[in-house]
Image (tube, rainbow, N blue to C red; front, side, top):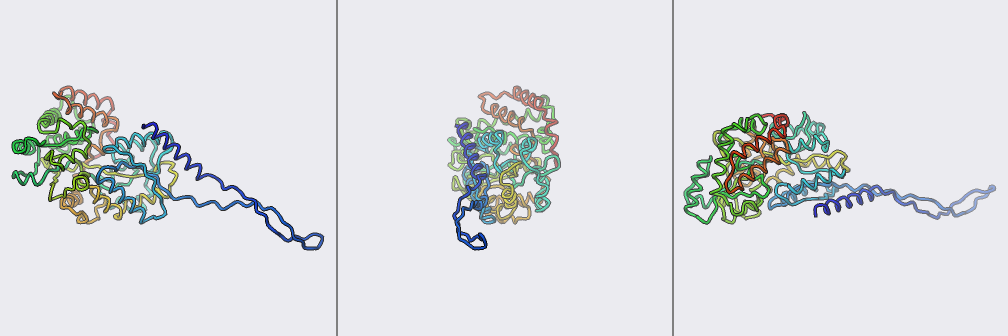
Length: 467
């Protein structure tokens, strides 16, 4: 099926290119003219070869994105509505590919790039994923764009760093997603007199109370089908035990993993969460299905990024501050925001260069960011947008905190400090650990230590600087 989709896309694109490049067929026109012969004017008919004026090139933008889940699809529609308002003559050609967090999208996109027929623009995360495309000469540098728009002046410096490779910006972020957010059934917590957990011990205590009161309910919903959700949970434990400096050093390959007591304890605490999680079905659930498990009251909590707000409101019809609460987690020993941005750039050799640059101008605008981020669940990339544009107090407070504390932002497991190949392997290792009936702490430590060496993480992640 994947091969068929790729072949079909190639045929469609080639047909479009041939149609666009076709020269209009000349036509023969019979005209009556007056000519002078031997001093006299006579009437004759002649054939005139006329070439019709070529039709103007259609203004179109081919775009790849993975926003197909509840809240995401509506956000994509809001993006394209903003583009239509600014440039009504641009036709959007969408190629959305379903898949949690863009897993399937990346497969098809990379096949298109390898085949030499990339779209004009595509969704990519900042950090190591973006660096992969830059290192492969897929994206154009955007120094002129940033100079013209002044966009660097209205976004946090860590966000600019996340889209800057070798001193040049290569994509335009339209949001900031925070990874480490704990969502909980607010009515249940009020019923049981529970407060939102601020750290691991609080989480375990809440789970014990919920299990006693609601034995049929899972405490923590985890969606492990795409494996990155498992890493999100482990991240919160590592961040609390080691702090932000440790977290950065670990993923830059500067920690001796084989002899590191913090990572070992983090794995032990992660394994202990099995007792309170949805172990019977977690391996079959995507992230949005884990959110839905909370919305359908099968589970009490889940750890997920800001995009879960859209999944709650659109998928479960739950309202923030009424049906569910959300807090940055953990807030010990400090309130650190693990983040990544959704971004767009322009591909090298994009067939619709002007349209792509106009698209990036819209991506950077409040006119796109306000309706899109409000709908999808992200934070505004621009810090000059009023936080009160968000309808819920959860994001109002978080946006204000981000604006005032940009130094608290650290790239997360989606943006990723790890080189991309290492990240893929790391997710598999951690997901396998959590799915095991008897999680192997020592074996997992060895696997991660070997991964750090195999992928030369210390060198590959040296580009990232924090704070």
